[in-house]
Length: 155
Image (cartoon, rainbow, N blue to C red; front, side, top):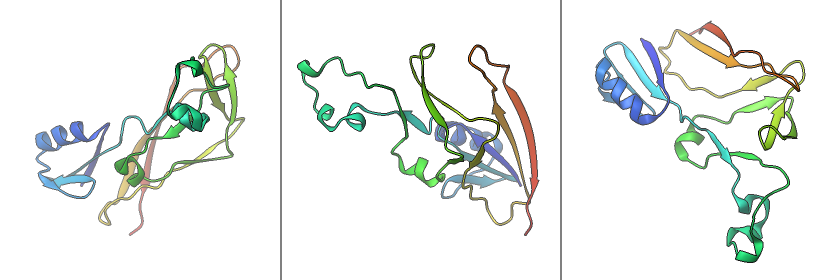
């Protein structure tokens, strides 16, 4: 079986149709030698005003403009996103205000480990993936780097 991961459910449906993966399962399509699943293009979003200050849930003209000291992010509140598993980082990143982006940027020094729960069917023999990342300092970012992974799974 080959696993194809699309950026969102609608693209997965179209891809499954083309590949002949016509059996709908919980979180993926299966058939013709393929599993077709999806991610949610954006797992995170900017925090809402009430995430910074409960008073801002019902905004008033006298509260405008609503501008927090720094902008934060949160996981999108969506059952499909939650089903994909909780992504965690170790160590936790440092957050700082970046004037170029006009928002909070999260940085790690030297090394970071990302944990992501992924569920695969028991018949899956290996995982192939690409990790894309950039290395930046205070003045510039190097071009993005792709690292290919091929992880055999033990039954």
